[in-house]
Image (cartoon, rainbow, N blue to C red; front, side, top):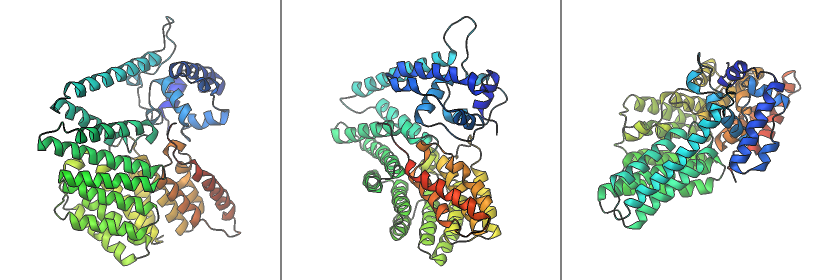
Length: 447
């Protein structure tokens, strides 16, 4: 795949390291002045790192990501997406013939000013309605929540973590303030608080703190109960099942998935399919093949009866689309050590389902999980080279994307690697060592 970054570098004559480096250094110095961070002035990629970027084989780490974003006026996600036929809409920067500032630099500064102005406007709205909560305050918070829901599966957590925490705090303060008099507004704020707490829980889980994740999950459950929203209540049970599943507490994961389905029998959104998928995975982790297969069948039956609800319409982690359903089904089979041809084919289909980064249901975590599952199915079929190929994109993920679920999935592959003395053992040994080095590089939030 030719990335947008590669296309832009080719067009600007920067495909060679020696031509690229001066422009990168210039962007790093500019960003250092903007952020007041002198360490950025020393930042420059090695030749091998640049080659990884150019060929789309590896994403940059945190500081380099920001420099590249400043340099091109585009997010790293956009830069690593497939190159379009035309880049005119991307507003790529380049030296202007009349000596003025690069368009990308100007655009970044305009965006920074716009963000500051938007925050000032938001503070004004919430302050102007301090006597009683009005529709503009609720609308502003709802817009923020919608943005968080859309961004969470698609961008590194450090980019949105502070926004989730800040918005959650504002909603909690409004609920505690006594300024909200209308029951409908109280319910709406509780719904927003539940969704924000859900994402704080998922984020805490992603950075490897299951204890904090459960605190947030319980807060989400309480707010969902206060809102009397069955779909959200079911969602919070699913969240608890997910957290305990990745903490290798399969019995608890199974309990939460089943409890969510039992306590919310009237829910028709995709969350009911998610609960069945979670139940199947947890049962498989326990080695209960019969219960896992029964849950797989029930998930497919429920899929046929789904009626999209307000959570599905919000999307992101609140929606359980078909491609994610397939990923869960494959993972269940993998946990049952099913290496049949049919499972391998399903695993390949699941990976293909997440190949398009522009798909609205794409999520980097699901893509990585699907790739690890494909690696495991190939290992079960005795195809070690195919397994190494399948997991390669996961191992090349930038540290900011390596959340807890991804690291656990990668380590499942490591545990399944053969240890014999055959030719494949060299590949297995190298892969095992790389995964062992990968684990400590879990997602780190900015200081």
